[in-house]
Amino acid sequence: MALLKKADSRPERDVANARGAAAVLRVHNQLRRVMRLLPALLSVSLAFIVGCSELDEDRDADLPEGWETADRVASFEQSACGESPIGGPSESLEIATSRSAVEVSYRHAHFRCSQTVEAFARLSTGVMDTLVQPVDMNPASVARCDCLYEITMSIAAPVGQYELTLYRRWDHKSGADEPRRVASRTVVLP
Image (cartoon, rainbow, N blue to C red; front, side, top):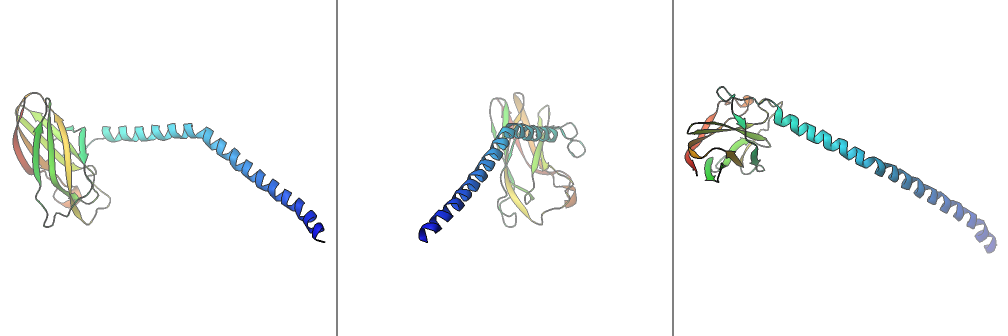
């Protein structure tokens, strides 16, 4: 009897192994198809990302009166949300210079939590004004908290002496969307 059971179960095992092998082969073939499509999917994804980032750079900014001719600062970095402004340090401005640019550090910049900001500069003889404001001046919803950010930017300018003034502007929903002077410094570009 035991011999008959072994003989009977052997074809079942072979059938099960064949089914398993067929399933593995199907998965293998599906993966090969996906791998063939992957380069095309990646190029479409990259084109979408590049296209969207170009649109962001070319979009019209919601600037306050008098800032219409300001240029968006290309070399700009914003830290992650830091400490709370309640009882925290005051906003401040630090300056360094290089051969053809002013390196600006806007310390403890006060904006909403998780709010992306950008900077604009307007230059004239002896004057360099910089404005930092939210990218989205009309947010659909707003965070119910504020935090302090570290912001750095590099502003290209010709050799000379400038009175640099840093302004901050909050979004329209804040009710305080006029530029507010943070600090001023005299800067000499050698």
